[in-house]
Length: 370
Image 1 (cartoon, rainbow, N blue to C red):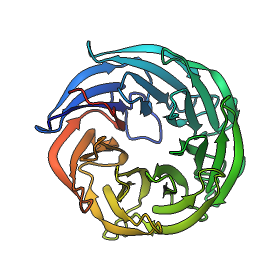
Image 2: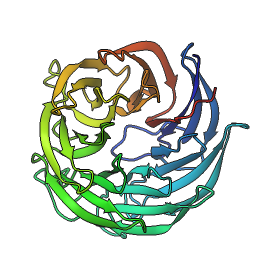
Image 3: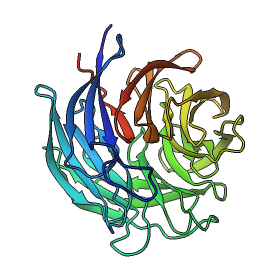
Image 4: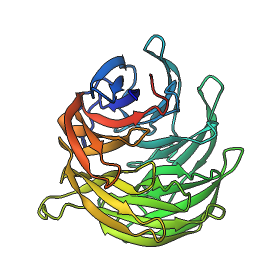
């Protein structure tokens, strides 16, 4: 049955010394026809700086965009509304994030809160790693409900000179969220309390110099997967949905072995809706790595590497039905559209793409347009 999906893309529009240019508009909304594979631009919003990460609610009517601004002591998170009837984006409100280089956000499963992570560079400002906002009935951000600061270092003096929280992900069961701290080589499980406060439950030290970045959740709620930026690995772990206790099950290299002399840093991780396959992005090798998942023991098996169709695949987006994977290729100004084989997990480049400036993040609304 033919469907049109809503696709949201954040594009870099303000220079930063660690990025190769900023050629984006800001926030863009496209429709994607899953039969013709054609995409149509529906709306653009330039009144937001560097929307490097997005969260979108199920019907795409509310978008939460981080602003990652180099040199600012605090980043921003902006709440926006999208009207399907008129294809218009409008500003609701925005808040400072109590920390710099705001890296990630996630809408909680009950839709009542927004979990925000600050990577943080330098000193000064409030310097909070994790921040919880409430969400009002109109989708706007309330004042901060709670904030946590991580402290420590890792073995890499350039990338782990301090804490660098890169994501905070709520589990399928709710009430527990796991933070990936790249600077500390650590996963930290928190109880997310009804009032928005965070209570530390458990922590797991990862391999020295690994740099955990993003998390993916198995649909059974018992397994989580972590992509490590600095040593280009993917780990599977078992987690107790009640206590947050974590244990490592498997670790595999995500790197493309055919490019041993090319520097690589992993970025994003996605899991197929059935939980059978993982997809990780390799920046440097410019590939998407595919692993199969054994749900019984958490073991990962390499399926292969697909060229990303551009350069620097910073973020990946799976269509809600799992039939397509989009790769936001930051330094190619291109979002590549892959068809996904649901039986063996392999990716096929469709030859179709969204040409857009410096794409940093790509998200689907779960509810189709038609």
